[in-house]
Length: 144
Image 1 (tube, rainbow, N blue to C red):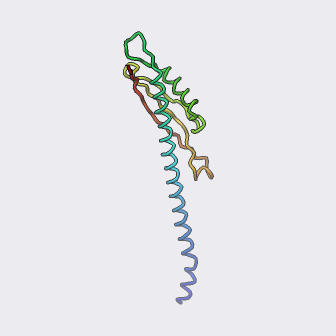
Image 2 (spheres, one colour):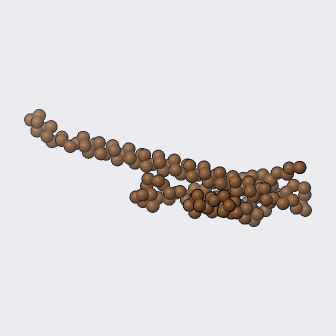
C-alpha cells in the first residue's frame, strides 16, 4: 500500500519547483522593470535640469527693471534647443517638452519633460511602455 501511495505522488515536486521558478522569474522581471523606469526618470530629470538652466541663462534684461527676465516662450524654445544640442532626443524615446512656464515675474524658469521607457524583460514578449514625466526649475541670476 505504501508503494502505491508513493507512485501516486510521483512528479508533484517537479510541478512545485516549476511553479516557484515561474514566480521567481516574474519577480525578477518586475524588479528589472522598476529599476529601468527609475534610472530613466533620473536621467530625464538631469536633462530637465540642463534645459531649465539653459532657459534661465537666456534671460534678457528688459525695461521692467535691473533684474533679467525670461518668458514662457523663451523657456520652451531654450529647452527644445537644449534637448537637440545635448542629444537627449536620441537618448530618450519620445522625449518632449510637455510644459514650460515662468514664475516670480519671469525670474524662475520651469520645464516639464515627458518620455516613454521600454521595460527591459517584458518588452521582448509584450510591447510594454511606461510614460514618465519630470519637472525642473532654475532661477535667473544677475552676476556683476
